[in-house]
Each structure stands twice: as structure tokens, then as C-alpha cells.
Amino acid sequence: MTLLYLFWAFFVPNILGYGGGPPIIPLLQAEVVDHFGWMTLEQFGDVLALGNALPSPIATKLAGYIGYQVAGAPGAIVALLATIAPTAIAMVILYKFLHLFKASPQVMAMTQIVRPIVAVLLGTLAFQFFASAYASAGLWQTAALTALSLIALEKFKIHPGIVVASALVYGAFFLS
Image 1 (cartoon, rainbow, N blue to C red):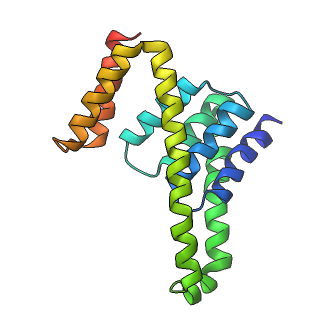
Image 2: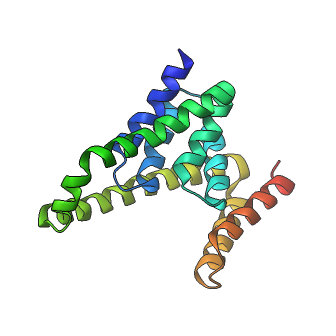
């Protein structure tokens, strides 16, 4: 039954997550953390941070790791299939329609409408991570890491993977 739940937990967000990885992340968090309780918000945040630091699509990395944590190798396979299947099915079925309507004003408008929704979902997730970090690390550590990360990303244009890896190393040595 766990494999079926695992399939469902990854299939639904990937079928509903129009636009790739970023829209899927809050949906996966709702399933993995809130609905099934396989991970805490902190654990999900750690997996997300590590996944963002590595190359390849974020959804498949999350699926492989979380699936393995929940049900071993069969869980990883099921979660990966559930992540890949919606896109594969949609591409096979909708290829002709997508090609016909790619320049349609309605399709372009739909894309423009989805962007702010994704921004709000990601902002909500970021706020939850910030609140969780504040609860576990305290105000000064959280504020310092946030400020240093922002400066590193915006002023010095350091790659996000390096910033995430640096914060992980800091957390491993000073917050554990």
C-alpha cells in the first residue's frame, strides 16, 4: 500500500504542476510533509536545498530521494515513474495540439496567469522554511545566513549551488 501512496503522492503534483520544477515543489511539500507525514518541513527543506545544489531536474531528484527514504529501491523507482509519467503521457497525447496552439493568445495568457500563482506558492514555502529555521536556529543565525546568502547571490553573483552548499556546511558544523 505504501508504494501506491508513494505513486499517488508524486503523480498528482506532477500532473498538476504546470511549468516544471518550481510549481511542483510546494505541491510535493504538501503531499510529503502535510498529507503523508513522511518527512518534517525541516527534512524536506534540507532535501530541497541539497537537490537544488545538484545538476538535473529538481522533481526527479526529490522523487528518487524521498521514494528511497520511504520504501527503499522500489520506492525510488515508483516515485520516479510517478514523476516522469505525467509529462511523458502528456507529450505523447498532446504533441500535435501543442504544436498547433503554441502561438495562441489564450495559451500565452494562461502562461502569464500561472506565473504569479507559482511565485505566491514559492513565497509561502520560503516563509515556512524561514519560520522553521528561526524556530530551530534562532533569530541571529537565521538573519545572518539570510543576509549573507542574499549578498552573495545579488552583489557578488555567486552561483546558488555554492551558496546552498556553504549554508549546509555552516549548518553541519555550527547548528547540529
